[in-house]
Length: 75
Image (cartoon, rainbow, N blue to C red; front, side, top):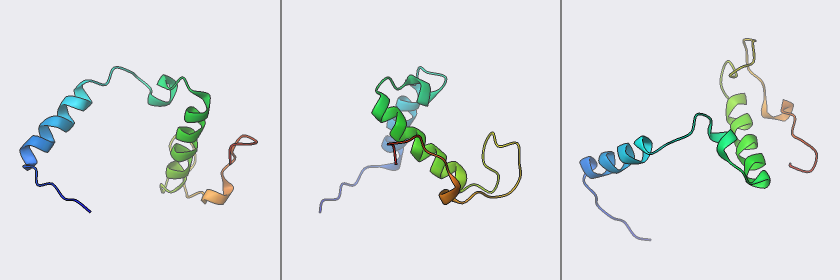
């Protein structure tokens, strides 16, 4: 295992430059590869289900990951 020591300011500058270079409004819609888009959507859905109020749900409360619906063949 390797470890690199990088000053915090350098890391912050690189991250800020990467964020400034984002040129899309919606990440999931920017992904053209269908399989990759499906993978990103599943990650987003799983993480959304862990939030106390899932985004865009119009409800309050918590969903469990087992209650998520995935398109056939993408599990």
